[in-house]
Length: 82
Image (cartoon, rainbow, N blue to C red; front, side, top):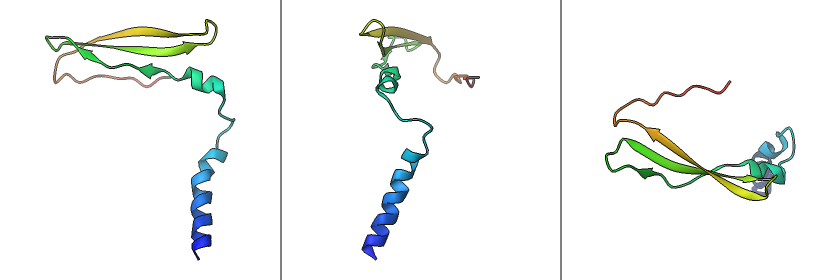
């Protein structure tokens, strides 16, 4: 009985791996972006953080600062990518 439960659990856990349309490659890892630690301005109205991504053509990491201004309690509006 334990073997049957173990086999069933194993099959359930590996099923997402086989549902992918293509294999995960090293290029996929390099496309992942990392977000750096955020810093809040002294007045609390702006935030800055960095986004890093490996550039395959240059062979180095690129860092991009991102600034956002906001007020506390303000709803942040987002739109789906289309």
